[in-house]
Image (cartoon, rainbow, N blue to C red):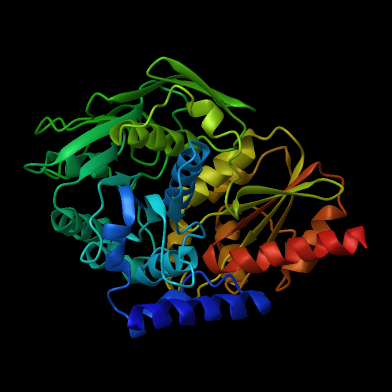
Length: 443
């Protein structure tokens, strides 16, 4: 009875949240767990086939949702926390929203994005069959601390999970180490050719996680992702089980996975990793991949994943919450040959991390080129990001506390496209502003 009351209460909160315009992605689950703490553990018996968990610093929402879309395209019922609420309460919300009023849930698979710090907590209640680990970068230093702390948390979570298959990024020396533990079964995916210009980049994990020596790279893609080896202990990039070659970074992007050609219309080189992780995981759970390209045709990127809004010119919204993410967003902006305006919003609320010193690790100087028309800064820490640009030798054309004013100003220029790069708590308000402006334009 307590379980039913928890589900009914959570459903009521979800309904009320939608009425007042909230996403209701975690608070209904948090409330339901207070009534029935074992709610999430019921997933172990409800899911008929497999529970697939995705974690890692960047790309986990996209990878998780791609996995869900691929399985749904095969006709399966999938329970998924699509909005990226990735703590225990977010998983609980996904559960209760999938349940009917009698508490029944029908699910062939569960695709769950889990925050790295919460993996040991969640794995006490659910036992995943597959864990995809996308990458590890510094993120929210005041919450996670340095990467070594995150690595230790994930190692404990893998032990807690028990008999689980790992799908690991072969190009990330920090991820590869999880496959070395005794009794662990792991497969690897990676990009086995030099694709991007070898411009010096900030490397988050440039030291060997085994012996501490500095790693050598035959080539790298961004941050510490590439073909690495340790000259001291021999630790090196494993040969990928799912090998990506013949990469073309254009529109559309093209590449091969184990010789099978793929073509996607998503922006961002990093999305190749997300897709490869899904391809590998589908193989691991025994699902066919000969129709992989077709499976993903209907996928729409989640909010802020190079999401496009149409005005008199396109406005592209991108979530970038740490140095590695911002560097990749800047790289994607720079591959666009059109004249462009760029807006950057930085907040420092609890979900962003209060410490914004990471801004000094972003290669902001790379955003300046002949195709940059105007640069606008906004957000709670507008002065911090503006100061960062001053030291990068780049003039800020406009500083404002209003995203609406920033977007209106950019839409009035003669540029061909606008890019809006935001960190976490600026994402949904910015989406709201863009939707509001579209309605005003259509009125």
